[in-house]
Image (cartoon, rainbow, N blue to C red; front, side):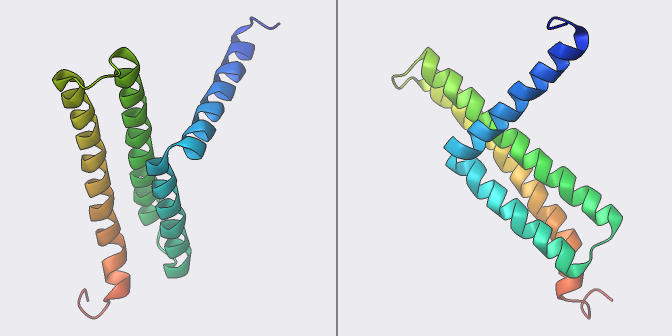
Length: 125
């Protein structure tokens, strides 16, 4: 039973949860993003945003946390492969950080579309 398809999927899910917890415990950038995510969710409940707005908000949060996790993985691999400074490793790490920037900017734009009408209703009516 331990090598069955279902057992392997369950074990894989356990590894994914372990990885997410490791990220939350060890990566300051993920910790900051997680706190921002909680605050944005609190704002969503406060302003009673629509189901569609929740969908976009959750997708934006997932996008940022996912790219942040991938960026941390890429940086970890790069540091493992070449612990000393190397221009190509620096380039790889910069590109990975740029991907996080794109996702974070996308999330900010989505947040503006969702929350600015609630914050400034007379301006958007």
